[in-house]
Amino acid sequence: MSFPEQLWMDHKENLSEYILDQARIQQQNMDLDYCDAIFNTGLNDIEDKIILLDGSDLKVVGLPQPSLNQIQSYQVKNVRKRIMTQMYSQHT
Image (cartoon, rainbow, N blue to C red; front, side, top):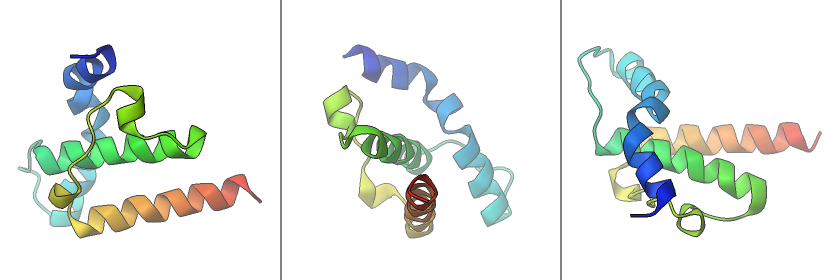
């Protein structure tokens, strides 16, 4: 296991905490817990930031790649919307 992958495994709950909180609010279910969909969304968020920085993906930096079929569509839409907002704000 690579160092970046081990780092992800050791800290994926901390790195995905905001996503879990948002899912709990959106689904009005405070009993939701971490699951593959939450972790995949976290990886997807990290990958989006890496792409913005230098055009790489998670594989290039040694992190596991998210399984997009496990990410719910509303989460993907929110991630893409945030990226577009960030890209727009950086170029204005």
